Length: 342
Image (cartoon, rainbow, N blue to C red; front, side, top):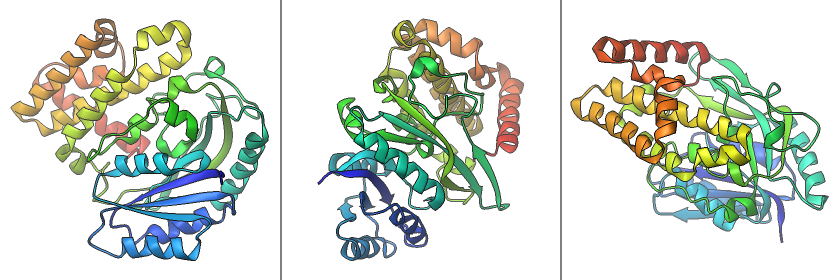
């Protein structure tokens, strides 16, 4: 039996916070599916909690236990097994606003009854900063039309700090399968691939100005913590290269120029982040990897290489010399403090 939406919840040693996540999803009604993917948890009761929910809500919750494959494989498992018309990933330490979720579900039910359901549904997300108990809402009212279905040709310009993240998107499940999305195992930061690679396959979009997703951020062990990101910079670089290779943005610009402009900006941001964290590492090997990353882009697209390296946000990560590298890091940390993105 097809469900309206599948919520995939990758769980890895998540016992301390996953109950809150699941409880908010359960408020969505009986026509949903929640897939709890236990990613080889061994340090707490995560596997037992997944099984308890599956036993308590057999028509709604499914538990999948897998050998540790990382967040991306949890997302892949959800896509493989999803019975929902739509698909959304919710991290086990995050949650959805129950009032906003009710409004989103009502609109998705309308689309399910339509001849051609939309491919992509977008809503706002909220940074919930644990260190100072503050919030920051990321909305898209300046980018997307409201109260109607639209295409990429109808979008406005994204601000420099404004991107579609995993938190803001709900995809039509079959579209994800048709575009061949497969995230790499044992790799952090693959959520960037999730919100990048499928976009050219999206033919119809709807945006609702509601604060749906609550993104819990600020724990010292999170993958977006600066010190953690430095130790995992090779995985950031790997994800950036996979995104670089996934599409020919020059060709896309001829058919969907506004989407190509956005995807170019997103890739520029990823190149900047990779470059900055290789600079923060500072070792000769890391600086060599930075050079190699940019040479990979040059080989993939010389035109894109020159555009990103010298005429975009990525210039911040390419200021020459030792003092230039120090300035690059200073500018990054200033932006992080201002925008509070990790």
